[in-house]
Length: 325
Image (tube, rainbow, N blue to C red; front, side, top):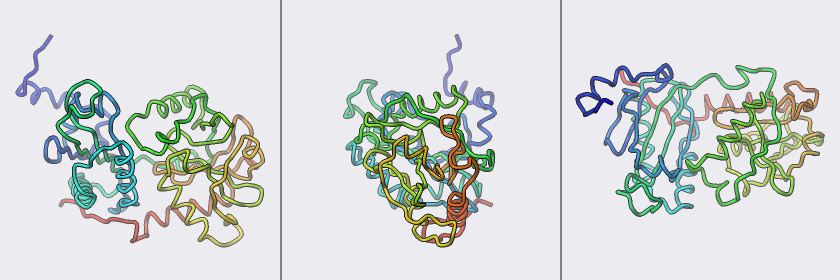
């Protein structure tokens, strides 16, 4: 077995590059005190409580044409998640925003994802959250693949998950303890589906592994489940605002929070998936049965167009940045 010191690691680093590293552009680490662009250095300490306990919070946001969309709502939600688990932020929100923008600039891309993490920090390997040196900030700038509907314009196939939803306390916190979410995604892949949706003990729909799911009911109302039993998606909240501001024959008549059952899904005109990586997407069939006529519906088309325009042009929600020459 080879013994690897710092000098040996420097020689080894180029050989550690993997195909997926082509989409890793830059990473800020408060442990290192700066930004690295070599994927082999985009690491965190194994004894960071994020690594061995999931004791951390995170956010993911996209940037398009040099503008980070919904940056402030994302970092404010991160602050709320941190507050919920008594995790002190290592920097102010203003400094966090500055670090994100500077890291994106060093990444030297005009389109991609910002992945933001605040961890409890390195320390002992036990569960004691006080046995650490202090909370840490990590920011990764990565590639953004085509959206789901660009890859699958016919829509998503969805089903019911066997994984129970998180309790309200944990559902509202975007922590790095994502084991139920990962198991839901595994279940979807194993079943040949695009996503599965959790239902609670009363039979009410909650959310997917990384996305909010809503319905357009028989009255044309866009509904999402009880927001206290799921993560309040920044995209979901913005889509609801856009829905209320959209007029015309294709617009929903309203956008509200309302509990949803399997029977509601069977009667729905449309079923929508919303999220940072999904934008606005649609479900063509649920548990093998078509939603509506099984094709993209008018509310989906209207809201997807509104959201994509909002991402590109809404100066109030876009934090713009340049790239290094």
